[in-house]
Structures are given as C-alpha cells and as structure tokens.
Length: 349
View (tube, one colour):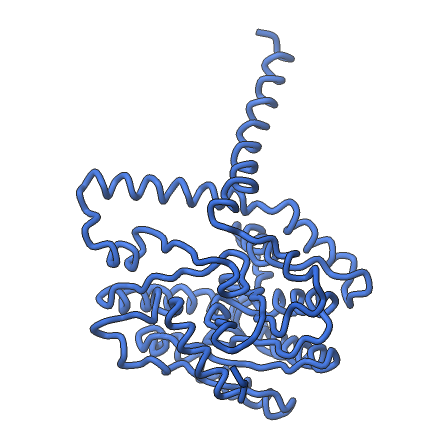
C-alpha cells in the first residue's frame, strides 16, 4: 500500500473516530436526556422573571416553588468570571428581569478557571456551553463573544457525554453480572450509577436535574470527598493566583452594578448542604475567611444575602429525601429550600 493511500486511510479513520461521538453526543444524547437548547429561553423577551448563575449550588433554586419563570445558567464548578460573562449575555437578551440569583459557597472566592491545567479547556467548554449568545449591543468584547460562540457551537461536551454514557453502561453491566443491583437507591446514591434527569422545564435548566436521594449511609463519605476536592482546588488557586479573592470580589461588585442598571435585583444566597461537607476543616476555614468579605460586600452595595446552609441539618440521617449527594439537593430538597427562599424574599406564590 502506497504512502498516499495509507495517509488517506489514516485521515478517514481519524475523521470517523471524531465524527461518531460528535454526532451521537450532539444529536442523539440530547434527545434521550430531553435537552432543551439554551436559546429557547431567550427567544421571547418577557419569558423570564429570574436567572440563576454560579456553580452547581445554583441548582437549588426551583422556580415553580417560588412562583417565578426562570432559567439556571449555572454549571459544575463554575467560577465568578464565568457567571459575569453569562450575566452580561443574558441581560442583553432579556428585558424586565426581576431577579438575578447568585449562590455563594465555601471556596467560591478562591476559584479561578484561568489556572493552567490539562483539563482547563475542557472545564471552560463545560462552563460556557450553557450560555445564551449575546445580543449585538451587549457589553462584551470580541474575544468574549468568540469564546461563547466557540464553546456553544463547537463544544467538546459531546465527547464527554458519550464517554460518560459508555462508563455508565459498562458499570451497569458489571453490576448486573455480579448480581449487585438490589439496593437501587444505594446504588444511585453512592455514585455507582448516575441519577436520571428531570424534565428541563422543572428547573428552567437545560439539562434537567438529578432527582433521586442518596442513601443516608452514603452521605458522610460523599460530603468528605466533595469537600476534599473543592478544598484542594481552592488551595491551588490561592497558591497560583495572588489576589484571587480581591479579583472575584471586584467581579461580584461589577455584576451587582450591571444587574441594578438593568432594573433587576441581585440576590446572594448560601444553599443547604450537609454538616459533613460544611464542617470539613479545610473548607470551613476557607469559609470563615470568605464570609465576612461577602457580608461586607452585601452591606456596601445594599444587596440581600441569605444563608440557608443548615436548613436541613438533623433531618436526613435516617431517611434522606433532600440530598442527592454530600452537598447538592434533590428535586424535593430544592422545592423545600425554594419555598423558604421565596418566603425570605417576600414573594407571593
């Protein structure tokens, strides 16, 4: 076989290897998971009352329980820089927005997506995929627009979806072969199998929401693992990026001003989390340093700041229905939290 023909075969094989997961992840997986395109939320200007930004704790906001129509723009481990970008994109597309909800949690001020790691590009693609395209008159640079366009149109996430689905399928086959599928809740809760997702309209969130509660005996271990991961990321940021807290606080101050200029109310909140996660020595020490700064910012700018971190403490040890892992809520947990949140805000439901 000639070198030219060998080269053409190599090119064709490479294209096939990349094309299959892209097509499956872009076309078929969203249909299976009932993914609603993010742009659908921004085709009618008066459709939204509220948006939620930030990291995964933003999923605690369940709009129907608050009497609001909203859209969650949060992503796992999303940083304040990402939230600011999404805020400007959303504000340029929506008129008459009432609320912008921003979850603040331990280590948020210590998080920086710009840290150079092998997974950085993949993480940014994950964060920015759930972002509306900004309007022509949006307060945004060409580079920022280009990043949003690239990560929403040419995202590597289809490959991630297919990879995760493959892992899930293999995991289920192994468990069935071992006859270890009797305790379905424990299997779901302890992370062996992924939780199925709810309908996107339930949270106004593009990818739905994990509904099933974690088995109570799994919560402590899950909280410890999550806290360790988040604490390590925070320590890495503090070491590599001097002044990261001041940078993030300045971005929050800027986001508050942008929200108020658009006629909306900016609200910061701490979502419920387990005692094990919140009381982790490293994470709690970080929060003891961060909380006074957030409270001072709230007082300086006049924005509301609500702390619900211990809302469910002591209520889930025997029969957990509110946590899907060590620091995230189930559908029922989010409903209960959002009712309490709405009452604190004085909303009529």
